[in-house]
Image 1 (spheres, one colour):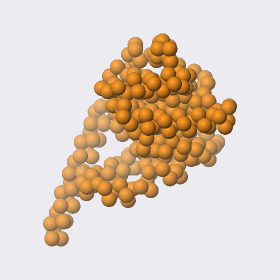
Image 2 (cartoon, one colour):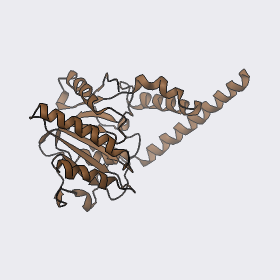
Image 3 (cartoon, helix red, strand yellow):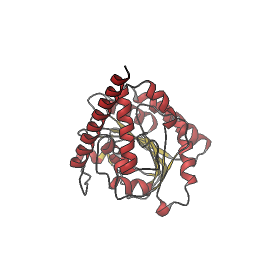
Image 4 (cartoon, one colour):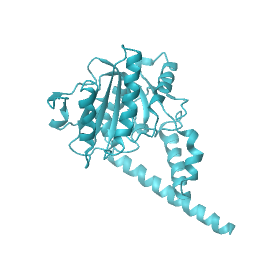
Length: 278
């Protein structure tokens, strides 16, 4: 029995190594040296609450909001309302307690085939287009490309990445804010606070197959060895960036699809893994 398990483990490790090599090869050949943000003409505008087209702002403009929340969404018509209700409920309550607090939520529909844009637009009509905006991409770009499009159209001094599936409790943004503030002084106003699910690793392993667990550890090793050594959970979709860090980081985005954030060369914003418990 023991030799069989050993052979199985060796086979799994070999398959995981092959898969990781293939992933690295695909990432290498699809990356571009000087990425260019191409916008389709329709992607330069958003619909306001009166269903009229307005030009989107640029991240190079001076910020006019304290916080921008960018929500990349692909076929999320069912899960998006749960996330939006929680996020907007928190943001509205925070604004009531502090009238100087201003925010916007930017939902980026990444070429969905369902009614994601229509679902998101209902929130625009309810809260107003100054608080909720929907960017509908003409074709699917991938999560990295969708986030970049939202970031480059944001107005906030700080920019939060938040997944549409609601996997993270939105009020935990306060932990990210604390992590970001603890990094001060910020070199050239650049800093990033990363959420972490590392404390849930044992629970997630128990629900995965051995093969997926091997792939997970192999991927984490590659990210640690080749890219980022100070962040335990680079793939958590809950990150808070200063405007300057967001501009520099996403201007250098080489891969628009999954696993995009830790693979950003030519940038060195100060980062921190937030001590969050979400």
